[in-house]
Image 1 (cartoon, rainbow, N blue to C red):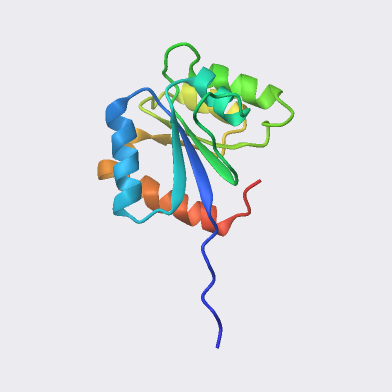
Image 2 (tube, rainbow, N blue to C red):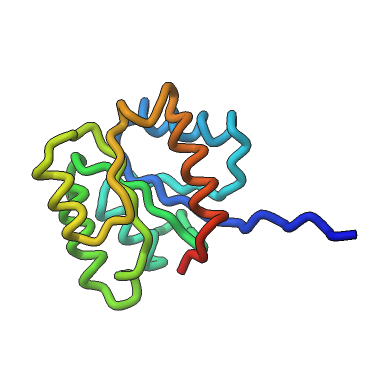
Length: 145
């Protein structure tokens, strides 16, 4: 008899300053039974501190997926991506943009920074339901760094 395969564990770093969006993503994960550790950063500066192990209280372990908003204070998503890709230890981090911007220029710029995908918040289903299913399938189908 074959034992059922255990689903790989993964972590999500949610980088967003919108409390409503954050709660929607977290609620969607709970509702759909997504088994991952989720850490929230309110901007790119905090996200980099977490990823580099320099944050006072927040820690995250891999394998890891970053969900990144583009429009944030202090350090926006594009500035975060530039710094992330310039860091030899972090440049391979899997990043999906999750934003309100449907502008072609933003999507093209994000893909030029080697994001794994670009999702518009309004298009990922009510209460981020499509996002939850997608992330679980992605994280269990690929080998994350």
